[in-house]
Amino acid sequence: MGSQLHSLGLALSALMLASCAGSAIDNKAATLPKAANESEAQESADAANIVVTGSRVRQQNLEMAAPVSVIGSQAYAPPPPSAPGLSGGWAPPYHDEGRDKFTSFAENSFHIVREAPVSTFSIDVDTASYSWVRASLNQNVLPQPAAVRTEEMVNYFHYDYAPPATTSQPFSTNVAVFPSPWAVGRQLVRIGIKGFEVRRAERPRANLVFLIDTSGSMQEPNKLPLVQRSLSMLVNELDERDTVAIVTYAGSAGTALAPTPVAQKRKILDVINQLGAGGSTAGAEGIRQAYHLAEANLDPRGVNRVILATDGDFNVGITDQGELKGYIERERSKGVFLSVLGFGMGNYNDALMQALAQNGNGTAAYIDTVQEAKKTLVEEAGSTLFPIAKDVKIQVEFNPLAVAEYRLIGYETRALNRDDFDNDKVDAGDVGSGQSVTALYEVVPVGGPLTNGGSRYSPEIVVTGLRIPRSPQQMELGFVKIRYKLPKSDTSKLISTPIDASVQFASFEAAPRDARFATAVAGFAELLRGGRYNGSLTYDDVLRIAAAARGPDEYGYRSEFLQLVRNAKGARSLAALGQ
Image 1 (cartoon, rainbow, N blue to C red):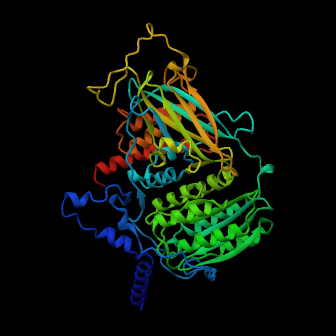
Image 2: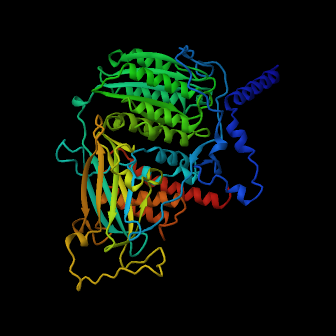
Image 3: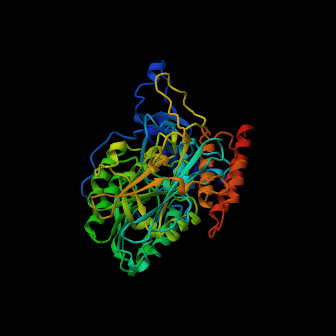
């Protein structure tokens, strides 16, 4: 009898896994035939690539279903208050392996200043990449290179930049130039932004809609149960005048809680705690209903935001990434922002969630632990929820008399055209209350060791400082311009600052402590991606630089970084041994 029950349990387990995980995308990815010849393999090379468990396949092969229209306004019943496996009954937890999806991108290369002196990009305050890297390294596994976005690694940390002098300008700028620690003859240019912090008493009212994935793929301890704990923490950070609504989606979508003032906190928490997982994933319909609730309760003077908590596995309704992006873009013009919280491993669709957050005037975070939930939704609740500037773009023009080559470290997925900078119709990233943003350039001064060979027909620029009179502008390395909009405005404003001798440091050790720590994090990220440009830098060098620049570490995040670098050394050794 015991063996029969055991067999029955195994059969039920297999059935549930098959019903939850079945998806055309993975069957196609797993059985994708080899191209018949080289030309076929290069077909549609301009299409964006998606990396699935280290294998690269064309994006058109990742569509889970044919695109269809968003489901109409029909109301769906919310899911049952609990599901098998969450209320004491026996059910195998859902688990996928090898279905994580990331968008691949080429690492930024060096540009010749006399050919392309201007660099333009959107700021990025997302931190999802760092948390994913940490989750991987804590399992002694090196992350996929496509999962490592250098700017998100750097911007995970708080930097002690001077705040803006007045609230009339939402943030200050901080520039420093110092020698590169990994390449003799090169320099690093650190550009820092610090947003002003909105005091709690002055925060605008928040109109929030929690959009929660309750599909079968969320039935794991690090998915729906962690979502419930995370959102409960956030509710406890809100004011009584704020409102929360809850939309859930599995095979269909429904309103689990109508807009409710946080004064009724117990009612909100009860709904969150009663959620259960099961079914397929009608994410697009959930998004539609969440935006509808946010717009119905819109506060023109407040913050209106949908917070999506999911592993990103949309397989019912609109599943095409382009169509979902288009829908989100249309909705953001109505004043509702979108933030994305990612959960789980094995079935995590980072590619989709990045696209949704970037096009929804929001941010993307990855929650792998309760501690990360506390950081994102408690310690940094102000910056997560309350924007102080939107569509923030940075443009740097390098001086060909002083700089021969440059490369932007990171921000590959945030690159903009030169003329996008002054075009207020072009979307860009947002800065939250009290948030800091950091960007790093690596530059080769004129006369330094070039990475690009010289041109036969382009004359070299020769600077003989003693013979040619030079104006202050000619002595500058470059000029930084930052364009931004206030949260309720459609017209941008401009901030600018030169990169001159006043911000240059003679040695790396003399550079500001935060600049050195950011350099260590950037170097670590570049090593994880393959280390194409960071010369002789090693993990031990990263440890040395980061330890010397750790400084005050109230929450232990910088100390944790040091341990991650050690984990990466160990994971690399295991990989080399084939374990």
